[in-house]
Each structure stands twice: as structure tokens, then as C-alpha cells.
Amino acid sequence: GASYVYDTILLPYIISHEWDIDHNVLELKTKAGHFAVLYLQTVANYGQEKFFELLQFFSSRSPKLKSDQ
Image (cartoon, rainbow, N blue to C red; front, side):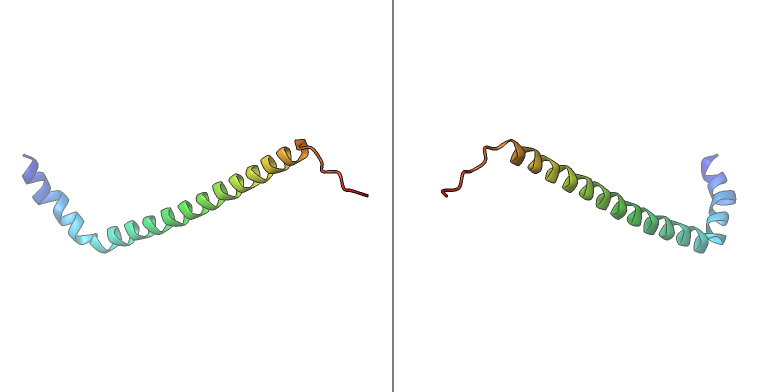
């Protein structure tokens, strides 16, 4: 059953379209890599922004030093 379907239908189709399949898989991997880099950059920028907001919050709450005049 399954081996007959694979040998007579699926395998010939895969062989005749192997280049297209490989090309599309490579293109998908490339696009996924670009998306991952873009996502990581967005997360890093957001994290950096929140970190600086937190620093600003704590620095505004700390007691000010008095200068000797």
C-alpha cells in the first residue's frame, strides 16, 4: 500500500521537482533567518529602552548631593 503510493506517485513527483523544492526550502530558511535577526533587534532595542527608563526612574528618586559652597 504505502510503498506503492510512494514509489509510483510521490517519488517521481519529488524527483521531477527537486530543484524547486530545494530552492524554496533555502529561500524559506533565508527569510526565517532575516526575520529572527529583525525580531532580536526589536527585542534588544525595547530592552535597552526600558533599562534606561529604569535607570532614569531610580536616579530621579535618589537623594541629591549638596555641594560645599
